[in-house]
Structure formats: C-alpha cells, structure tokens
Length: 364
Image (tube, rainbow, N blue to C red):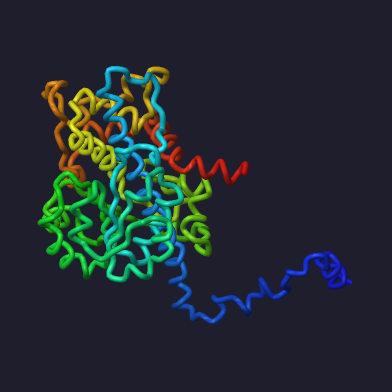
C-alpha cells in the first residue's frame, strides 16, 4: 500500500527516478575503506578553486577601480560621491593577463567574464593550445601563445601553470615583466619570497590554503561548476579573505592575503602617479567605499602611517610596498584590518563585486 501511495505521488513527475539515491548505485559504494578516506579531497579541491576565482575577481575589480579614480581625484570638478563605475565604458581599465589556459586559468577567465566589471578586450590569455579556448575567443578574449608578449602588456598577471613548469616560465618572462605589474600566483607551492626571487618582482602575492580535521567534514557542493558556486551569497562569504574563521568553511586562506590586496592598490596608485594624499583618498574609496556622504570613523580610515609612510610629504608621489615582506612582520595595517568595524565594511565591499549578478538571479 505504501509503495502504491509513493507511485501515485510521483506519477505527475515523469522524470522521477526511484534509483537516484539507491546507495548501491552511488560512486562511493565501489570504493575501499582506504579510498573513502580520500573523498574529502573533492570538496577541498573544489573549495580552493572557488576561493581562488573569487579572489581573482576581487583583485581585478579593486585595481581597476584605482585606475579609474585617478582621473576623478586629479580633476578640478571631482564628484562628491563614490560611484562603482561600469568598466566597460571607461578607457583606463586594468589590463589583465592569464598565463596558462588549463583548468585553473580558464576557470578564472570564465569568472572574470561573468562577474568582473571589465572590458573583455582588456583580457588576454597565453597558452600552448589557444585552440582549446574557442568559447573565450568568441567572447572577445585574446587567446594566443606568447608569454613574453603577454607579461609585457598587462597591469595584472595571473600565473596559472603547474609547479613543475614555473621555473622555466619564470626564466622566460623575468626580463619582460614590469615592476609595476601586479602578479598573482594563485596555486604555486613555492614560498612567496622564493617567487619574488624567481620572477624578480616585489609586486607579487599568492594564495595559500589550510584546513582542519573538523573543516574537512563540512558540507560543500562540489558537483556544480565554479561560476554556479559563486552565484550563491553564502559561498561568496566563505571565500572572503578577511573573514576566515567561519565554522562552516572547508578551507581557509592565508590571513595576510587581504592585507596584501590592499597594499597592491597602493602600488597601483603609485603606478598611475597619485600623490600620497590622493592615494589615501583613493584606497579608502575603493576598499572602504568612503565618500562625502559616507565618512569613515577615524579609527577605521586608512592613513599614511598604516602603510609606513608617516614621514612622507602628502604631496609626494606614493611609494610602493614590498608585498612579500608583509608575511613576516607585524604592521599597523594588520592591526587596523582586525578591527570589527573594518572587517564589516571590507566584507560588504567584497560582496559588492558579486552582488549585481546575485540580484539578477534573485529578481530576474
């Protein structure tokens, strides 16, 4: 009788499959006990890739915002409120290059297309097999094989190659890599200082991830693609580099990554010729969304002293920061970014990058 009732309840759904959740037909049923201990790697690997793509999107967004605000800050008729610009309509967008068109490089490119507020003509990929990226080429992404050409023509470079390939790639491009280019190595196993020596640049940052036995048991939907994962607000919140103590996280990124991203904005301000005073105004607008209508509290606002520029004349050009050196020293910026008020504002700005698409999904 119970079976008849169940069949009646599902008769209207022709797609119902009574074997869908049958344990004996699941992938895990054929695994040995030793192999089952490795199942957590699926969630972990997927969570790391999602986090890397989210960080890549945010980094491109804030660096582009710095470049766009330059004209506003140096204009005699400046706007009184910060506006998150439509990068597709601006001429000073950051030029982004991805070295490596494999799984990670192509995932970052797909996510930049979906979430990144950038002109796709400013996105380039260098890969040995550009013919495999036909979809990206149809979107307007310039895909070719020419590592030297790539690194010499971009403002932000993602290096997405296998660890075994990195020494050879570094030897090839180090003479063509500008000190002003921000380099992000999302998956390198090398220490940051070693990468600095290898690529001969101090304008470099990377993601590192760790996990615990407890976090490995947290649920994570690894069956969906990366873009679909980032369409969910709770997943985006889990990737936020400044808020990594969530009990439901599967992986945790290095605690100084958010600080290095802020300092990368300082370095971009130096590249575009902002003075120290203009740089501080720009970084507070980009990172904390300060404006004439939204003034920050004094204990939250970023100052020259936070970046070690306390003895620099505000009218002088902004200095650059050695990003790898941040890892090993205590800084005033680190203390400020640990303030609850700062964390809340940073979280809001980070989520803002993904919010437009979230709104479209929710409301059509």
